[in-house]
Each structure stands twice: as structure tokens, then as C-alpha cells.
Image 1 (cartoon, rainbow, N blue to C red):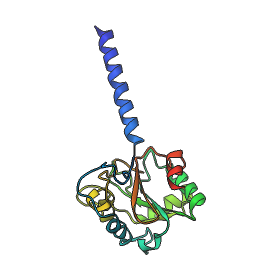
Image 2 (image 1 turned 90 degrees about the vertical axis):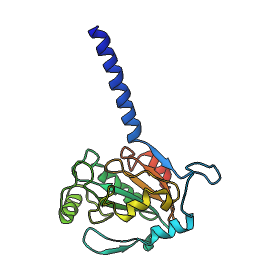
Image 3 (image 1 turned 45 degrees about the vertical axis):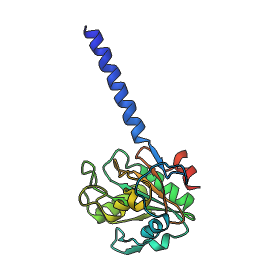
Image 4 (image 1 turned 180 degrees about the vertical axis):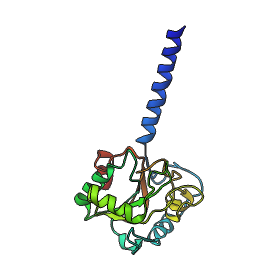
Length: 205
């Protein structure tokens, strides 16, 4: 009887692990025109792109950044944290920035939403990123990426009535949203998608 119980427990554990693994590496993409996927009330693509470029946010050093400057380039937006198992992705994000910086903009948004894994001040976060990973891509002041105090940018990224198709908000630190050269949200990557992995490299080419 004990052997049967142990076997069932092992199977349940394995199924749960596989489920979590699949969720961590999920990629969502904008539906192809005319496919009927992700149906419902959706934003007009032109209005959605203009909404993205209308954002103005403060960088981690307090300088205002107008998103209008990102026109003509792809943009990868990442919610970051300093005390997460995915924090080493900072290194790959910097590598991607160095490799693709002529046509891809990487924007980092520190957030303390997940197990309080980003407790530092903006200055502490900036120093951590520079000291440990030599980060030179654009970092912003700490915001909330989900919940009642969700920043309007992440409301836009996770509400299909605003962005046109996607309702997925960040599930953990280091989730990634890809916006194309025209300001349209085109892909969502969960935390497990590595910045220098094939999924993201093929999407940003």
C-alpha cells in the first residue's frame, strides 16, 4: 500500500513540475490578421501603437524618457529584480543590448511585486546593476507591474482592449514584452525565456 502511495505521489509531483516548467517558458504572440484568434474587444492597431509612444517615464536616475524616441526600433521591456533566481539574466540582457543595440532597445523596469525580491532604492538598484552586470541598457525607476497600483505602461501591455491582443500580465520577475518598430505589441515571453536564447533572438532579428 505504501509503495502504491509513493508511486502516485511521484507521478503527481512529476506532472506538477512539468506544468510549471511549461508555464515558465511560455511564449505568446500576436495573432495573424484574419485568424480570429484572441477574439474580443481589442484596440485599433494604430491607436495601440500611438499609445505606446505616448508614454513618458523617469529613468532610474530621474531623467524623463519620452517613448517617442523609440520609433523605428524594436523594444524589449523586462520587469527586473535584484534578488531573484532569474537575476543573472541581466548579463544576457546586456549581451543582447551590445549585439543588437542598433535596432533593438532594451528597457528594464525594477519591480518589487514578486516575493519582495526588489527591495532596494533606485540608487541601490542602479549601483547593483552596474557593479554586478555592467548594465548600460536603459533602466527605469522602480514601478509596480501588477495589482491595484499597476503602472499604466504595464496596464497597456497586459490589457488587450489597449494593446490589441494580449491579456497576460507578468507572472514573475524577468517576463518580457516585445514591441515592434511601429509600436505594436507582438510577443510575450515568460521568465524562463533567456535573452540570448533562440526564441528571443529569432524574434528580435
